[in-house]
Image 1 (tube, rainbow, N blue to C red):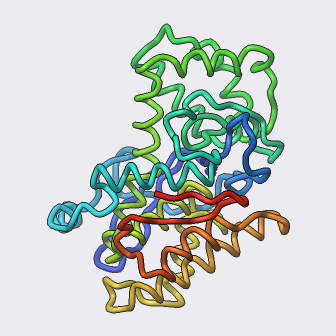
Image 2: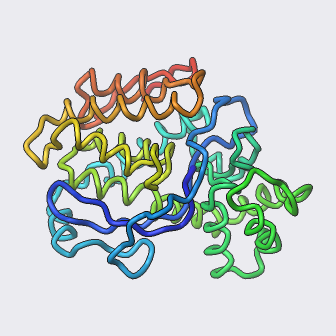
Image 3: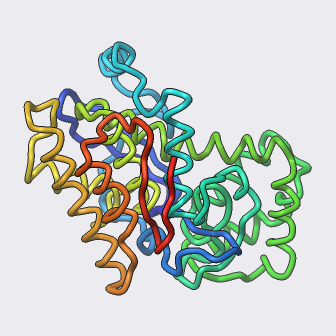
Length: 307
């Protein structure tokens, strides 16, 4: 994932105010053939980001929101739908449906983010990889990546490999064989990307497809308030259309949000492939697949996938 570093923020919600807490940034990162473009914009801590009213990253939001969400259908959080989401996002991040095969992926994509690694493309240049290794090391101090923490802190926010070469990539692949590290990647994915995206989408009144749209955008653009970060894109969408929670049509709101998602991809690099929007998420929307019921067919980077 790409992101703008660790910070706290509060953003308005259609139903009620909710605190959001972020940390890292986004995808790609397989050494096999895959998309040649970065999955997210260049990082950069935003000056003057609003402070959160919560006390820690990943803390629960307003109890009233928690209660409201508890009464909603599971949507993308249902085990089968979450697995489906993992496959769809992996098709755009790693050009595979087998997201579990990507724990050990690690490569510099030449996108200014340093090394991109793991199931959602944690990056050495965008803080999320550092946050992952720090949390993992707290639980497992003698792990094979712990010795790279000083270097990871030094290169955070840059594309530098200083202190990481030549052993970091081999150490990452080796650690990916450890079940605890695989679990740590999934936990960080959920904490930073999946859970906040699904929560926000539910509070906006969006169904399963809308939750996937938010999750994909969160992974690609990073959960931050930079111009093209997820929360800024959502704010721009709110300015153009009402969410279902505000009485708007779900299809219209998602159409507006996907336009902004695509625009932000192209803004990063004009020759960027936008098929993760054009022939994946928008295809699902145009087909009326709001519940993401299978069979589904989509196309990313010239490759067709079916589930």
